[in-house]
Length: 145
Image (cartoon, rainbow, N blue to C red):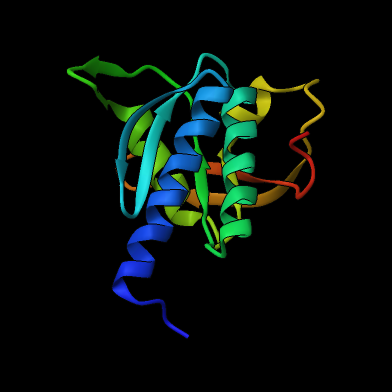
């Protein structure tokens, strides 16, 4: 059954509250939250991955299916906005993610070597406006602990 508009608004509010809680718990900074997604920054890629996994699990408990895409790189931060090539790449990574998936660039995977986070290779992908092919990796279920 499709939830009523009021029920959906309440569910989305609960989801956004959970997103903010997880971002804060992992010491991230939420920058933008919209009905269809959010952008947050972190001081380390492992925290970002663990946050995405925690949000995915919270969403599952709420009956919502999510997907996440993570990349790391230089960003410009002004007036609570984050811009730059790293943001553009991150947006394209999330577009390549399957429902329920936390997908990361090779850059992120390489930076968390030794963290205990396990990945599954999702192959090479072309990202619009970015030279070459980019290897992407899915965070294995249960591998964020």
